[in-house]
Length: 347
Ligand SMILES: *[C@@H]1O[C@H](CO)[C@@H](O)[C@H](O)[C@H]1NC(C)=O
Image: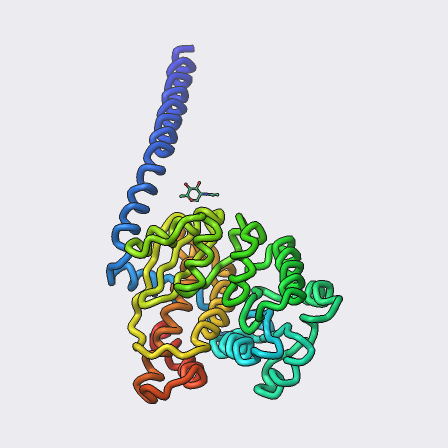
């Protein structure tokens, strides 16, 4: 009997201790998270942070092995390309391939398709974006795509934008990550509810596009003295989806943390550089989600992908600038993807 009481007491004590411990852990965990957040916000500039984030990018890169079949390392779709703009979707699609995607699809207008095909035999080009069945045509491909990049060379034609709305709705319903750039961002500024709260979206505005979005969503002008705060607030106002503000430094936020990519580039900005970013981001987002939060050390995979794509683009800029100086163009930058990738992530 006595033994039984002692055993019972000890068991109860154990249970109480366990309860206490878990209560403590519950209390301690948010405190630690808050501290870490404050730390990372405060330290957003530090080189050490950049080095740590580089390591996370290295962690998500799938190894090249003989065991994989075609398509596993990424099937990316680009939505854009019309009569006026055929270069942008080409740059985005070819960059995705050069970074390591297995297949790159372009969904563009009927007129733009033969032009884009003629740039490269490596892309799959669908002349569907101005068709009355555009949404259904793209939807049929969605189950076979890992990421969609919406906006390069899209233009502002009402019919096209209406089709893109439909494509965005279908992608959201299927949970497909979407990178949104260029006139895709123009569409979002007209109708933020299209993307609001969809945390698998990642927006890549330059400064002009950022201001337009910010004013549309927050109904306030941007405080140009507080880039970090502005990016954080826009992300939060859109429901914590990831925003990359491209600029002298790229400022990245998911509404919780702010990362800064200040990898050295050059002072030369050529049209098309943003397409290299959005195309490579399409691949890295897929890889980061595939790798999971264990490989990203708990950091939001979208932040890791964003940091990877920004630093890669800047490294391509730097390398191409060293060779061509003022005459550097996006084609020169794309030719550097292989060596830039190796230098940043494989050494
Ligand atoms: C976004 O993140 C912030 C900071 O962690 C949080 O306070 C807020 O509730 C989040 N918003 C949504 C919609 O999840």
